[in-house]
Structure formats: C-alpha cells, structure tokens
Amino acid sequence: MEHIPTYSLPPVSLVLGGARSGKSSHAEKLVSGTLFGASPQPAVYIATGEAGDIEMATRIMAHRARRGGAWTTIEEPLKLATALETAAAHGQPVLVDCLTLWLSNLMHAGADVDEATDEALRALDGYGTPVVFVSNELGLGLVPETPLGRSFRDAMGRMNMRVAERADRVIFMAAGLPLLMKDRPAPRS
Image (cartoon, rainbow, N blue to C red; front, side, top):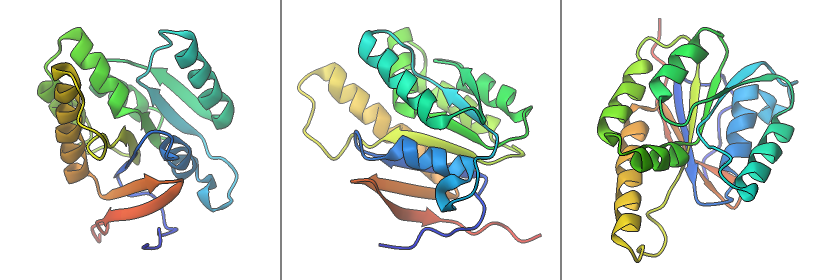
C-alpha cells in the first residue's frame, strides 16, 4: 500500500470504493483538514442524496452529525454543475457526496447522464478551491439481475472513469483503508 501524502489537496480528487468502505468519512477528513489531526477547517458539502425514506433520512442525519458545524451544506440532487458554481463563491474546499446518488437521480429524472457529467466537469475548469468527489465502485460485485441494474452499473463505471481521468488524485477505499491509485503532481509555477 502506497503512503497517502500529507500535503495539501490537489485541485480535483476522487474517493471511491464499495458500500460502507469508509469513503465519505475519509473524504470529509481530507476536505476539512482533520485527516492529519488538525482542527476542522470550513468547507462546503454538496449533498446529492434526498431523504426519500426513513433509512436515508437517518443516514443524512448521521453524516451531518459527523461533519459538525464547520461545513456549509448545499443540497442539489440534479444540477451538480450549478451547485459547484455556487460552492466556488465560498472559497473553501468542496466535497461532493456522492456521484452514485447523483447518477441515480439523473437516471430517475430521465436526464442525459453524459451531458450532465460534461457540465459538472466543465464547472471545474479554473476552479479556485479543491474539490473531492465520492463515488461507489460497483463493478467489483455480482452482475445485477435486471437490465436497469446492469445499465446503472455500466453508467456508474463510465462516470467514475471520466471523473478519475479528470482527477489529480484517486483514492480507493477498502475496509476503511485508503489505497492511492493516482497522484498527479501539481504543476509548478
């Protein structure tokens, strides 16, 4: 396992892994600066999930409690590019949690996933603060039984590849452990 560097966040990072792998918690620590024991720094959290049932409402409450008061939350289930533009005005690191729920929302709304992904990635051009995306890796498990499940898994894989290509750093979470997959050095000025 490669050591995760302790220097500042690159412009764009992706933290991905399976369900309950520690993705969100690790990303929150990266963005808030607490991964290495510092006091929490102000940050922006773009939440793509919606409390559609009791289980999801409970998860959202647990995430909010874990983050604490140093975070500004922007709830946006569909228009991620717009949310990123709004978050940029804060001048603080941004966490987008998560691309998996965003994809589900887009597909449910009948939106063009590729177009929405293009818009979100274009919103990062010239972005002034670090952005960390969280996403599920769905391609390591069983093949979904239904055509919709397979379509979702495939769309998630394509989206993850596009974000990983754009990202400067990619971290894969397994059993709560971060595995550095990509770390592109920052350009020298």
